[in-house]
Length: 248
Ligand SMILES: [Fe+2]
Image (tube, rainbow, N blue to C red):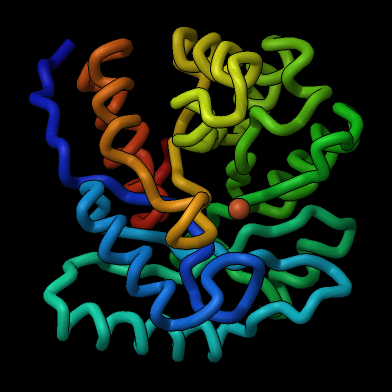
């Protein structure tokens, strides 16, 4: 196994609600900028921005998303915040999701075949498994967002193994790793990390107060507990493969 020296400032966040005024994340440009400053100080250098995309909601269109990304880039240039932004969506799974993607009403991750997929916490295991399979069958590479939230998936680690065997990638939230959602969630995530069943850790940040883009402490913790190599895969290498549309 090759040795990797920990690099504490080269992370990619693949799940963040930082575009202003489009979902329940950042409320305005000031808040987005505060989040970007915070993220930069935490070592984040690239982001796939992932506003919610849900049925019966007003979802931000691709053009508007590009417009907001340009706006944030211009502001960051002035402040010398060097974070590259890529378009994406957190896609709420529904039966016509593939159709929405094909019609351009929803975005993949950085224009790749990867899609960030979310379900309801109480959704049945079979529904989640079949939803993931739907995306795979249509040629997409699903990333299951914050897997630690789905009660029926958490019941049995074998279910996570099954999802990965199918071709699904697994994302957990940095705050869950750090115990912000209780010891139960922390313990579960620990079990997954120990067995190397996680592919990404992301912030899922929503604001600049209580759901901030914190990554530095989590990276340090992962490095200490599971090694620099795994930390590098979770926070840098695997996200880069998403952006380059390569297999993980
Ligand atoms: Fe999210």
